[in-house]
Image 1 (cartoon, rainbow, N blue to C red):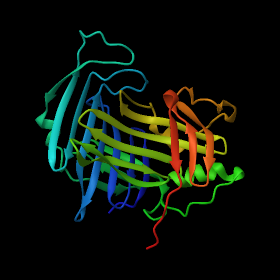
Image 2 (cartoon, rainbow, N blue to C red):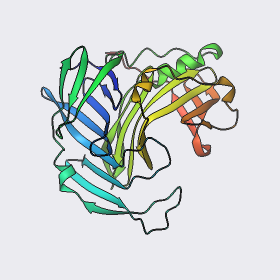
Image 3 (spheres, rainbow, N blue to C red):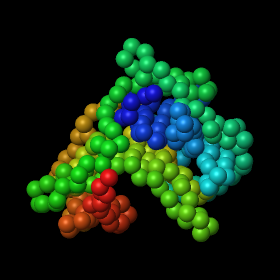
Image 4 (cartoon, rainbow, N blue to C red):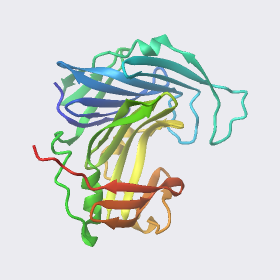
Length: 292
């Protein structure tokens, strides 16, 4: 079985934990972007969520012409295709889609994750015949993703921002007053991943980040949610994220191309508050680890 860690290729990225896998890929042949969420059962990882969007854009701010999604909510599968209404008065921020059922995307739920190793690279194989080579970029174990959280001081805010936020978190919200699993968040020492899907929203992304005593710089190389894109050469995600520390603001988040700067607003022994987007305040809490 594949080792846990982060794997990156030109048109592909993947994060593997002991229980979950998220894959992100560009299908050039079919002109789509795709995210998948797998959950381990018995000896295999099985697909429990999928999101496809087309066309396969490399630029931001372009709404997909279609979304195809499938997910299992409390044991009940839902599979839909949303098609952009070209005649609607779409704006930069709102886009009107027509939703229809899609059996084809639904049939991919339950498919098994398949991989081989060739020439030192991992090759991930999909049911549509596409293969994706990827190199190991970051090694970890589930346990190492939960380091002992340091006590915060003025001189180690950056270390706390990185280590307090690491880990694997199942996302559960109430849908129709029922606690419902909607996806997974996985944060490593260099990358942030999420696959999250509700009946009304999509948020799947892969990103690099850097933490400093002034705040966090966050750069998405793959995104599905409102817009959809993957950078032209995804191997860029292997590189340390460059940033300009002078761009941190005392009042708000700052965008610089695909990078967003969340600056520290304040902190306490158990919480760091950051200036988020649209005026939000993000609260990164010190994790509480229960001794085994």
